[in-house]
Image (cartoon, rainbow, N blue to C red; front, side, top):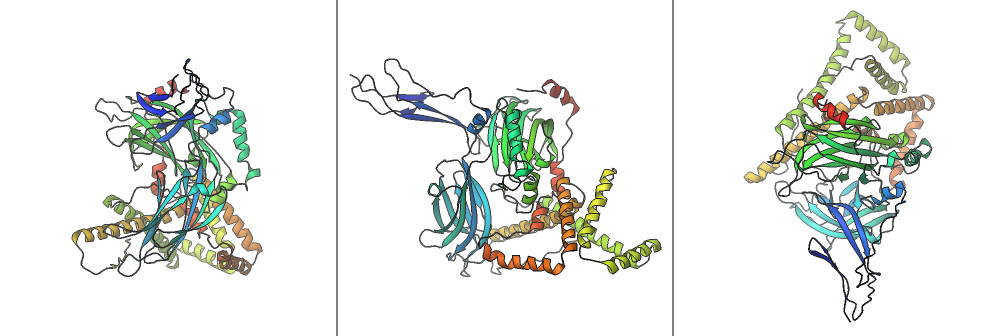
Length: 610
């Protein structure tokens, strides 16, 4: 008799050993082995690619047979598509408030912020200054890779300028204990009685995020495409408002990439990102003209999101080298059009070497997309820290200067009408003033904005571009909160923090002015048409309903909102709308560059890869 057991090895390394069946020549192990395959990412999170199951309940010693359960060949395309999903669901977290946190500063208060960690994913909240009972009111989503849920690690920190942040406390949340499709209000005690956090947590089902080969292409199947179009039809406009649509992008190939290795070649791979969803191709070694032929599918929660495609060079000795990048707003995608995009630098301001060939399709519900435009956009939980940049500071200053100069020029033009510098212009202005003031009604305010939008639309239709105002110094007083003497490093970090604050403030002011301008300039036709629709509805509403009733309804809503939903996250619909309009910097980043004509023959030669 023997005491058999089974060992599994990969490349000579043991990966599994079964239990021992004593004194038996016909053993039955009744065990299952799961072999998981990951895609190695350099400096990044490894991506799950697939798994295989080996059942040992029918293994015979004499014949050395292993029965492996394989997929049936008659799987429908949709079943195969679902098999390639990379994560199991979404955990939506609303960070509401903190209670009775311990003081960390000499003033008896703290400047708290919260860090969340779920596996490799991290999120950092905003900092609430000088309080022990902060109100964050933030919302964000994390991916669920573990079917059971996983452990959410939460830590609270005190922000200190010029020195290391102080640790306040921590706690953990076992997501496997929470039921799905239900919002849970949780009051989590920090360890050692250092305070409490209030959260709203919701676990939802898997979203449509997948990677596959060209042979497993969802939208190429007429039946599957029709099902998706039906899913986002106008008749389903008010079902699951967060599910706006889906985008499928085929990453076909690249040509003429930059040589990153000493051999004059590169080992390129590609990463596709849509907000917090991130997928990666395999690496093609030792080439400047790689072919990936991969199909990425993303769920669309905001039609104004930007699809970012970045090409890297794999390097086992250090982090991956950047080769090029393109950013494509979803509204700019033309369905089923194969297109060559010139790769750009990290800032997306100028071209780098090489082009990438992509083909994309976007299917979405216009009503859902419009409604989602007036809520806060999803924030990225992986973003680079802001850095001091003389060039960026000067750039933001010039942008604010142009906006302010536009207002000054407009004011000067109006004032010149009062000075009768041009009698004809002043007479026309006087007649318009009398007519408008004599007949003014409140509904004329949205109508005047509507008139400006229409005027610019006809300018564009006639081949002309709307006039852009040029835009004075912006003086900002910076308060020094601490008059105590500081060391050189403390002063340096404090000055750096102030410069970053000024730099970001200038950027926000400039972006606001440019987004207002670009709304009327029809930079994004979808948003301009949406503005026309809202202005028409507003003008009609104000015309037929007395203003006092509208103000009364608005006031009642504002006063009762806190009572109806105590944990409601406040938002400004106008600012949320403007956040979707690209600034002048973003328009430059999203602009397509012309590919070199020398690359066009190759494009024709390989027009139908795979």
